[in-house]
Every structure is written in structure tokens, then in C-alpha cells.
Image 1 (cartoon, rainbow, N blue to C red):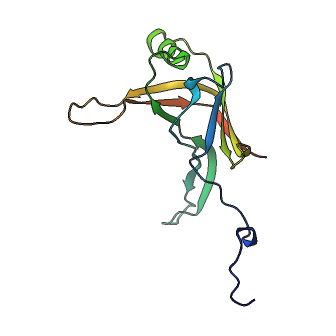
Image 2 (image 1 turned 30 degrees about the vertical axis):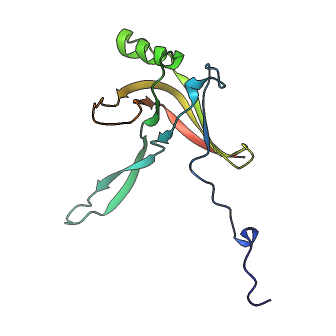
Image 3 (image 1 turned 60 degrees about the vertical axis):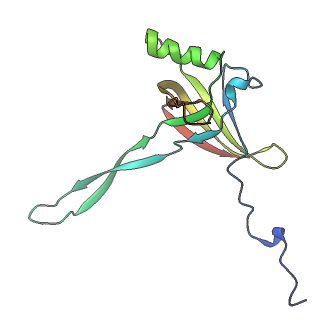
Length: 157
């Protein structure tokens, strides 16, 4: 029994894989091709710090937290010919009309069940990038969509 290999269940946790995820934008059909992305990034939050110096000292005496700062949510996918999501972007960029929506990003297990998910509150489009075209390449056209939001919360299932 001393040389028995450890089973996967013997480890203290099962680390999820990063390639199995789902994106929902509330108000959009979750079964459409519109919400299928190849990359999701920008899930970042950090606390800003203010440094205070006490009188007569040459070094920083206190480093105090001030507020939380969030990065933009970055979604990448192959460009679609017809997309309601891009209409949302065009309204924001071309008409300067914003319609914030909540966004949910879920990390899925092998049974397509959410292991954990993040809820982004009041997201709206702030950047839209179409990949460069190249006659010498053999790649798909990828569009990158960036959303600003108020805050996010992580929920574990």
C-alpha cells in the first residue's frame, strides 16, 4: 500500500479549469451566439492607498486604504455579422446613449454547472476594438469589447 498512487479526490481542492466559462448579459438572449466569447479578462479589483507622513519624520508613517478601484471587463470573440450586443455598443459610441446591464461570468465544472461566478453591476460599453486585417495572416477577425461597471461581487455555488 505504500506505493499506491493518490487519487484526485485526495487533494484538498479541485482547481477549476479556465477554459470552461459562460457569460450572461441580462436583457440579452443567453442562448444566442452573441454571448459566446473566447476570452474573458479584467477581473481585477484593488484598494488605493494614501500615504501619510507624521510631522518631523522623513519616512511614511501610515499607509491607509482609501477606495476600491475596478478594471474594465474585457470580452473577446470572433466577429459576428449580425449582433444585438454590437447594437448596444454602437448606441453608446455613436449616439452616446447608455443602457447599463448586469453581467454574470460563471466558471463551469465538467457538468456545465457554475462553480463560482462574478456579478458585474451596471456594466456599459466603453471600448470596442476590431483586430487588424492582414493579407499575410490566416486568422479570424476578433473583436474585443470592454465594459466599465460600478463594482463586482464573487458568488460561490
